[in-house]
Image (cartoon, rainbow, N blue to C red; front, side, top):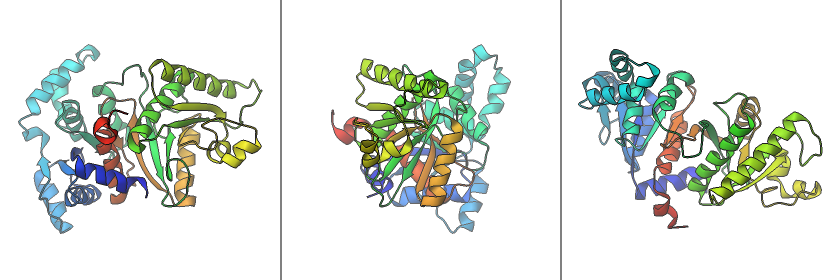
Length: 343
């Protein structure tokens, strides 16, 4: 079974509230309707109430089970303005600027997420990536001991037996163009934590490069090796149950026969379910090639390194993509102990 049906079943047992800043977009409305129909929780649709109702009517779609919120008319508006101004005061934000920002549905949605009035957030359907990401990076704190916020793509094959029962996690595919060694370390750990939460398996992280266990001292290879060593040490110190290896080529990371032929013996080589790319170019190109040539389902970008679950989807996303991203961040919001006990 692919990943999304498993996540749907979990959310039916542990429903969550997902906020959509672009509530009037047809794809958002269709995904929200599925969320309600499948009894996964409550979608919050932000935007002009009349416009959202008109868009729903055009789709012959009922808004039953959903909450429509107009930020400027919400009873939470003034409190959010005060909290946001206080949060950004050190950056020179003025009260009038905070008020104007909170009229933007992306900022209002992020404040809902930050204050626990929503469990997860999905944005980006109609705005640029920077417009969707800016509020999240300004408002949502980083995870403890993680300085880098980045992103991952969930690659989900219906039948291909790679990764975790056909599911792979690619990072970073959308945020940091040229990550440093320290940033690669953070990307590996934060991506692994999400992979473990969603699959229930021990994350097996491959730090990818153009060579496998080479004796070359080329700076790009040294950077990957150092990042892998750093991530292993950080995971061990924090008692995180994950496995990391690198540098590895993609085939050695995914195919046990190839790894064996190259003399690489590790718990990760040939069995990786998390692939950390050396830079944004390679990560973004790789996931789009897999999507186009292999017909894989791709969901994201799922943001990593933040204390609250959020996704920044593509403006080209379908309703299916929106729903999948929502299911992923919704399941991130479920307490791990409810899913797997105390393991």
